[in-house]
Amino acid sequence: MPTNTLQQHYFDLLLERVSSERYPSHQMLDRIEASFWTGDQITAYVGTLLEKLGDEQYPSHQILNRIERMLLLTSTVA
Image 1 (tube, rainbow, N blue to C red):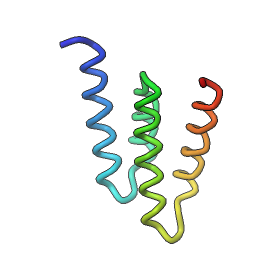
Image 2 (image 1 turned 180 degrees about the horizontal axis):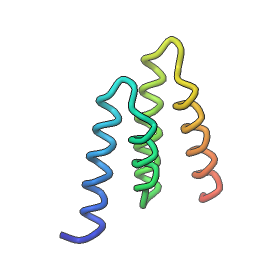
Image 3 (image 1 turned 30 degrees about the vertical axis):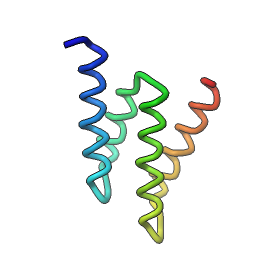
Image 4 (image 1 turned 30 degrees about the horizontal axis):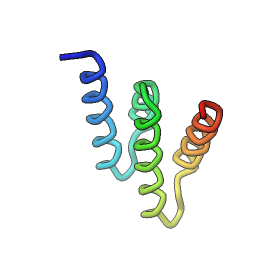
């Protein structure tokens, strides 16, 4: 199996884990952020985090900070 396919599979597993947990651990979020290879992966990750914000009356500062960091990252890459 090509490396990019393995990486995408790994990323997909991590993203599914993050999306299924109400409060994903910072270790899991750190791990998924370290696994990015493409802009599409960053977009999918930020979309997942934004969905989490929509469900919470009092959103996590950690999630907000991560979204802001990813948006800054994508704006400097573009």
